[in-house]
Length: 582
Image 1 (cartoon, rainbow, N blue to C red):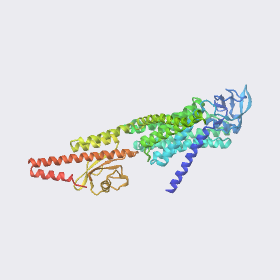
Image 2: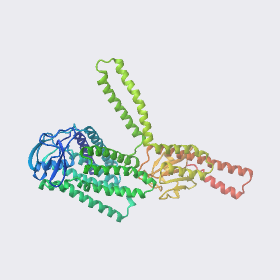
Image 3: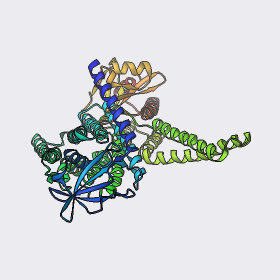
Image 4: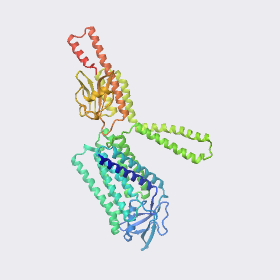
């Protein structure tokens, strides 16, 4: 146990440091004042960078003689192949160009790239996706409970640490080592992504299909490793740059297609409930894989590609985080409820309040403002942001909790209406049906007290619960003693360890219990359990009233003499068993 927490702590430190370093370096981009497009194995074309003047000795369209470059210049070209913002500022390199068939050596020094077009967008999107990757990694690392969560953790951690190495502003062999290390981590991230998708689909694949998909993935992964790791090595050693050409970026990206195709195929065969859980993961995966292809091939040009891919990465990671928190595509012991979301929105509004107040104080009020004005501005700002807060809460309710809100409203209405059901059998049927439909429970059962046991009177879902449970079964003992929800995972009972039991309690008598199975990979939030407890209480009250009505009808029949002695005795025994006090 101590070793496990030690490893988790080390990984947590690595995640935080990698995210912080990547975010910090995104605001300090430095690189060569031009881009290169590799035309063939021995030639590259100089391309200008927006808002960055070319060195006087260079012109757009000049051709670099890659074979004639020094080792340090070849390493620089290799690093530019991944990103042109990870160089030490002020570092000089010598490049050989051919002009009218005459070789010319040009010395070029790295410059600050923070003035290029859309640099601010690149910086803030890098900060955003670094934060999102860190949140995903920490969430599934500490709270993940299945193989899919482990795969997602491997993917997020490897990707984030790879980004940190990619942003390391190093030169020479140290820079090349960081570049190769980043790509090794990106290959490991692909393995984590595949493990996550394969584990999410679970038993939907046969053993033979598992091996076929894994084989295809490993073949493409190996091809990507050869082109991505072997290409720079060959170029630095020999000057042969064929594997650095943009089309080979497709080979490096292709291994992501296997888990994506697996997810698309499984989505087509999934039922409605499973489709709902996979939909966010599917669309996030599509955006993420398209982003990887655009980034590795630069078909839109290096500057446009960086803006588009950073934006797409933020979008896809947001989708993955939502799929984990809301739809439980991996099993995490974490519940996204109203309290957490509203706390986050309140923090956001308070942060905006502090920011606006600071800006107004600096730009408008100054040091000579009157005391009344200094009080009036925060009050007016607070009133305005109060309206904003209410609107944000309304949007959150509609976006995050619309389905949950409707389901809760339906269950509350049923809890109010069940008192007007006239037959016990109908009460049992409707109760089970309503909870299955609106709570999404895969298994629901109702137990009623008899003379010597609790009997299962209605049940939905598999595996089936026992038809009878002893009166002094530990679960029912706890329900009688506490009159509160019971987590079956903490109780040794014939009811098993899956889900919750809620008492049908009235006037100190436990008439029975409502047993609700746990949703796959998802836990009931506290407000959901509170609502189920309320429904169980109202159903218990309705059942009590129906049994009282049966007794009243029996007494009336006896008084009127419409029952034969044998029938009266049998009915009295049946009624007596339902009125045994706990």
